[in-house]
Amino acid sequence: MTAESPLRSVVSNLIFENPIVLAAGTAGYGEELAGVMRVEALGGFVTKAVSLAPRHGNPAPRVAEFEGGMMNAVGLANPGLAAVRRDQIPWLATHLLASRKIVNVVGFTVDEYPAVVAGLEEELDGANAAAVDAFELNVSCPNTKAGGMEFGADPQALRAVVEGARRETRRPLFVKLSPVLPNIGEAARIAADAGADAISVVNTIPGLVIDVERRRPALGFGTGGVSGPAILPVGVLATWKVRQAVTLPIVGLGGVRSGTDAVQYILAGASLVGVGTAAMRDPRAPERIVRELEDWCRHHGVRDIQTLSGSLEWPAQA
Image 1 (tube, rainbow, N blue to C red):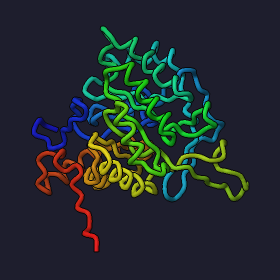
Image 2: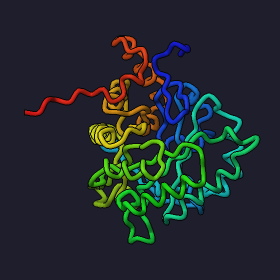
Image 3: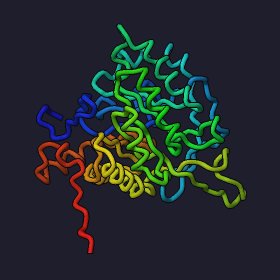
Image 4: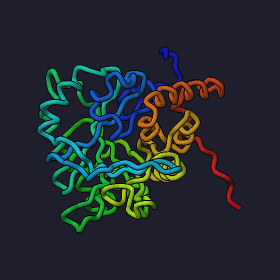
């Protein structure tokens, strides 16, 4: 794309050459994609999770496909903060410099989120300053000190997590919310008031796929998260609800397979659009989606995609 491309987007003072980003869990820490896809052709990517301690994740099989998409129960497997500081931050600081890099952060108590952010920030000076552009807080994790309730579903815990992380960094904070929240707009407002710079919607939806021959769950953990085409309308609706509630930029994701899928999210209010399952099925899909989105804009006379965000025309109520 040239400098005249209609796709350049600005979110929280970060320039994205286009609005398509790889969703958390699909890009590893970037190094895993070398030779697989041209990440530089995308606006950026969200890394897999980073937790305070290493996590081995759930038993195999961790992924199962079904007609409407994919189920996964990876269990937030990651090498932990110390290993990411040692191995991943130096690599990110010197690679993929044309793409924005957002680090996904998870925790299982309120204090773990700011601890991970603070630990990463300690490595992000000098030669490593370009390693991370922003953090994404996955607040769909179970709060182990509150009986397993998701942080995003507990207003006090959500506020404490975001405020705690905000104190530890000046980099933009994206807060990733679950589509099963009873009032996702209110959760977005709480996150915004606590210091969030953007909202990511949606995470996967809990589900169960059964292997009928074995009469057992298809996943080793039993249940898992539903992703892929089946959740596209869920994500688009959540994006629209969040746009009605807050003025923060939104990352819309869930079920995106084409440029027109991305346009749906943008019309509903997204500034960036995440691609996950489609990229895992076909590493060429994200680049194709960028081309389709650019073609759509040119065909419809859209010179600046940012003007398209939130322009959905809602039907008049009788």
